Length: 483
Image (cartoon, rainbow, N blue to C red):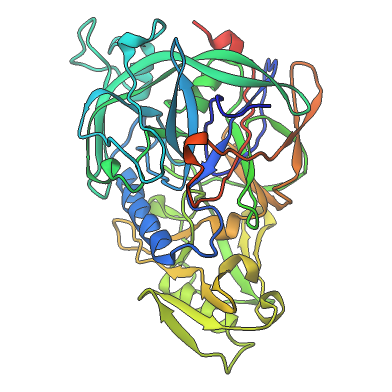
């Protein structure tokens, strides 16, 4: 099956429950910018996370569609196919973003080239026979901003402007066009179909969005707001707002899907309500069988705090008290081990033994008795033979009221199937072999299909020194979405 010309969309891993009158599923493939951690510059990973954190904090200040503004994942990008005739675009994939936007024709200060070795393109609505603008008096525009535009006049464009915490900004207007999807029709079998989706047409950019080091054609959001692709599909009554991902920590591959996961089974906990991100209630941290003695209010969920589960972040960022206690317990079994600093910010050490035998497992305890185990091979990076660096970071990330936040990224999510159920406001996970397959139920037929991990390697990117991360996105009954 040729994935090269397929619309590749969505986030750092995921698979999920799908629902209602679902006649099929859709496959998307996503590429991981950094892939495996060994041999990559840790400074580059930290810099990426720092930029993302700045943009995440902006969600408190800027709301799009009432549930929070888009954020830039930067780690994952995919190829999507838009228009008639169809044109491929590379977009960043992010669970925290709420809209899909691409650079448009004659965009001001949009990037012209990318260090990712992909050919950048700009969407031209006049070149697509199925493209049309979304006007401010249409229902989508009202839904996007959770209110009618009091200054709207018939025929005016539905405009958007998103400013991120790092100063980056995109401005433009919404358009609607056909997207090409690969519908899953059986075990690892697909057929082509189209769906009509509203998305942002970026006419002007500033800041890091135009940086050639991470430049792509746009961002695709898979967040909770009603402007996301998932929400648009759900509003049609064809799917429910549920998705999941699975990241292979060893091979850099994975699975991304929408649909009801029949196998494997997993436990869940509730999401913190009215949060812009996927926030959960963390009750305690256990290191090597012993609970850390932490302040009672450290994991307070007020004022949009709590613990953020974020596949767009590489490392794990902890409040200073938690960080210090965790490191002390972690190193207790190796009292003679000396640490040194790499790239001016990472604590590292030399160790010749088996790290899973020499260091403890860390367990995060959440509401509803949900555990998140993190093994030494997850939180320790081997940057070169026998030299390991610690993935735990003290973040300095704070809310407006000065409280430190906990953010758990890829190092704790690797090798786990993570499920986001926005219908029931829950999230769950289980340890899993992400290079294998899952079973997803087709509600239309009642059949459960095997969906496996795949690799995307665009012909234009063969020289890239990045690992491929592929995901499968299962969407249902998109045939009925065509306008």
